[in-house]
Image (cartoon, rainbow, N blue to C red):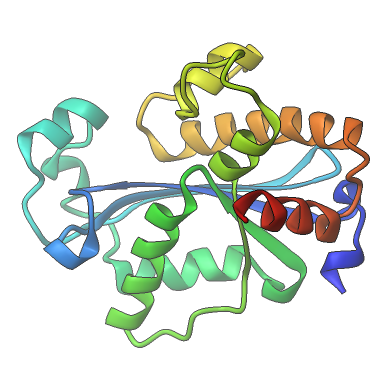
Length: 201
């Protein structure tokens, strides 16, 4: 059972998305998926795909991400990209899906899976924002944005609103947070989950 697995032996798939807007409920779509599969500090694989959202990209999104409609013109649509991403995550019941502000990324992925009638895998999901809030004090950082934590921890990869780069940054932040978790006596994924559950109460 994954809960009893030592953090060093747990497989994490750290994902980041770029999108055309803030919510799939308002018609926004995914434009890029980036993910890194890691275990024990070792990168097992990386996933990177543009996605043609079949909707216009607002100018401010292009300015933020550098992703243009021309770049996505020949990109796979979500019907093709999402199954490929799920395949990258296999076996689903033996990995933890991680994102910084997971409700955003997971919300888009779940919405897309419903839209294309693709069953949602039974992922464990971990949010590095919640993890950071539980292990890093406000005396250390002014907020828990990825860029702030990247600067505080001195990550090699700097977040830049591109999916794979931001996923790579999140991996570095996650590992630094795991070091802190270890100092709190948290060594398994289940202990980490219990720690986060207590913090929410």
